[in-house]
Image 1: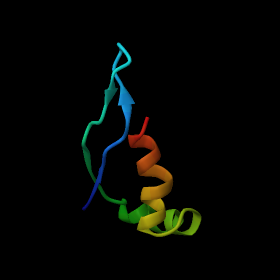
Image 2: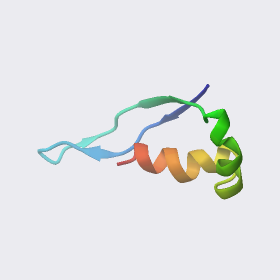
Image 3: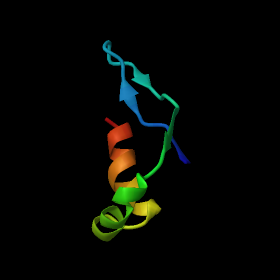
Amino acid sequence: MQKQESSPEASSKDWQDVFPDVALNWHIIPEEANPIFQHIGDDFFVVDRIIDPAVGR
């Protein structure tokens, strides 16, 4: 289990800037680890390419 923390910038419905703190616990399913590491890379790339963009939405 790994923990990723970030503070994405967002806007409220009345256009005020909000800066939420987000903490996400995640892990790679062992059976899926080999294809993930082959196509995406190590944990750094998983965070950079998948988790951070999803949290920033």
